[in-house]
Length: 77
Image (cartoon, rainbow, N blue to C red; front, side, top):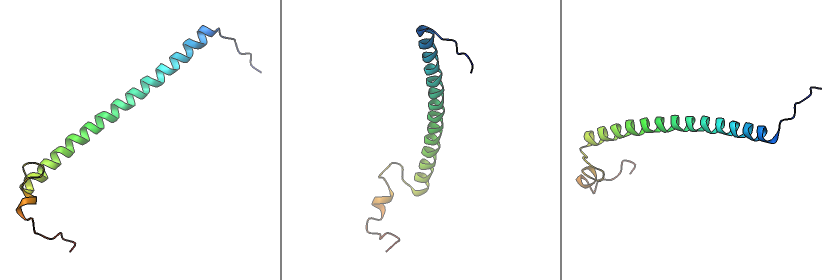
């Protein structure tokens, strides 16, 4: 059996706080990375959406395509 040195309550409290800070710092870093990835995805998707709108002749959401052929049946009919 190994003898464990008893720590005083202040030392134990400081150690617990240091562990929590390390965990929170790691968590914040992971969140920052995820947010950066999502930002990149949003930028890419916005570019793709704008390219699709240009190809279909729609300049803005709700413009162009819907009013051009209001009576056209959907392809599944």
